[in-house]
Length: 448
Image 1 (tube, rainbow, N blue to C red):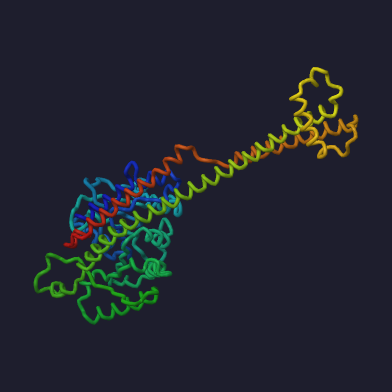
Image 2: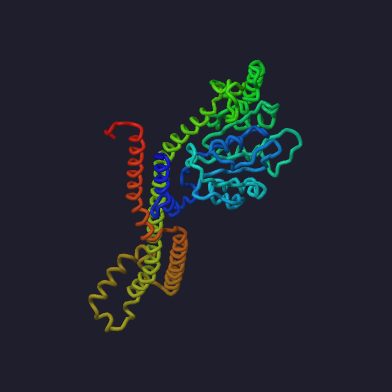
């Protein structure tokens, strides 16, 4: 199937050694970038004995789910395709490993939910099962039935990860189950999942009286409309699993033309095509997210480097100034007391000329008058220079400690981040090729 091939190729763009997952992890995005699922997730909700498990068995052509009114699903059961059927169901943490996008739910609902997660693997290739995962939800029952977790909240949370949500309503007195309607209402709040939801009247073959069917449909329609916001175009097709043993003259056989179960399959097929397009679009979104993150990190690193560099320069200036002060003081003292110097020193004309020039330039800024510097003035000059030396060095050290707060990346890390730009371009090119390949499957144009 072409869709399966394309979705697998899209997944490889994430899981490859230099794919989006590894790049995202390197730049700190982690679980924010998840590999798009290669299958359409169909979640089925409904009251107890609404025919959820029976439909799944019919779709995959295998009795993998137990059915019967005496059986009540207490947890979430995932049915997926694989190369080998599991002899025993995959439970708990192992299911989370198969569906890592459900990890946040384990934190939200805890161990009580995790222990009630089950996965069945089937080798069936019927219909489009190879690109479909079914999620069979707990049977909803009114009354004092105890669930191991908040079943209503768990179903709503699980709906965020579903591509389709089927609401199965059976006519055996359970179609108006209040708990089912509560879940429907929660799923339709703010219209967040309205586009995913499809409503079906299951086991419609058990109602052979047209008047009873009409009455039942009116009741169900009114009840659903009372719990949803988007009431425009509400459809509730009647479906049932065909009994191959029914005779030609039986009432069920006569009603066969009213069975719209094929429309359910068509809805799943449409969702598969939409999933392919969504996955291709997700690649572009994730590339832009990663690219934006890399640019932000590089800009932050550049800012940190500039801030660190400027403070290092300031610290160096304070350090140099701290050492210039005692040197200037030394020159001033030599200029003031040059008459007391040895003759050999005074004969060094070049040195003494420099000292005298410097002394004459600095003296007006340091000393108040032209009078000779006395003992008290000398002590003040030495004390002041010592204080300034210590103060400027202290300021320099303080700035150096602040410099350490500006963390910068190593050069090889920065170079690696910059190299990702070309890798992301290659991923986008591959994504475009996959998109063209998908379009060519359904069109005859070669002008792509």
